[in-house]
Every structure is written in structure tokens, then in C-alpha cells.
Length: 129
Image (cartoon, rainbow, N blue to C red):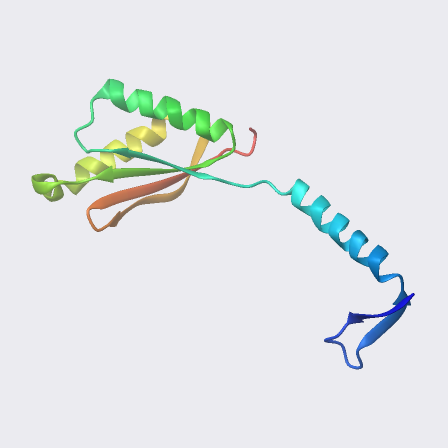
């Protein structure tokens, strides 16, 4: 048996007489069990340009739907280069069309936002999945 300091931050500190090896084993087992129950959420990124063609957009939306069905968040990025920077509204239209194509599986978490030369939008999976 060992004298184990169970709660050193308490006033006065709490100590117990117990088997320290057994205590450490139980703590490790409890921690491992709590990690099993956690779901790691990944963020998948899909990049495109504002002048993307209809078929390319539908292919990217299909891939995003797969990610959303797996429970991952999707970050959709429209990258602007050169003269495209003068037409940010086209990028917003592309993002909203993308959101419509994936509407069956997703909800818009963060609406389109301009960050430098990129416009980003976040999609999260619907709860019914």
C-alpha cells in the first residue's frame, strides 16, 4: 500500500492509502476508454476558380458529398488570380451554386468570406446523417 496524493490542488490536499500501481492502471484504462468514444472531425478542403465549368463543379460537389457523408467538415475555397480579383461576385455565385449541389448532405456553417485572394465557405454535415 502507498500514500497517494489524490487531489494536490485542494485545501487541504487529499491523500489516500491505496495500491498505486492499481490506481495508475485504472486511470490509464479510463483515459483510453474516453478516447475511444471521441469522434475526430477532419476538415477537407476543395479548391476551385471562379470560372469553373459546370461539369467540374458537379464532380467536386460529388466528392464533397462523400466527405460530408463520412462526417467531415468541408472547406470550399475559390482562388482569385489577376483580373479575377475585380469580379468577387462571380466567386460568391460559384460558392452558392456549390452549396445548392451539396444541400442534400450539408448545411452552410460559415457563409462566403473573403480572405486575401481567396473566398472561403465552410459546410458541415446534416445531423440526420
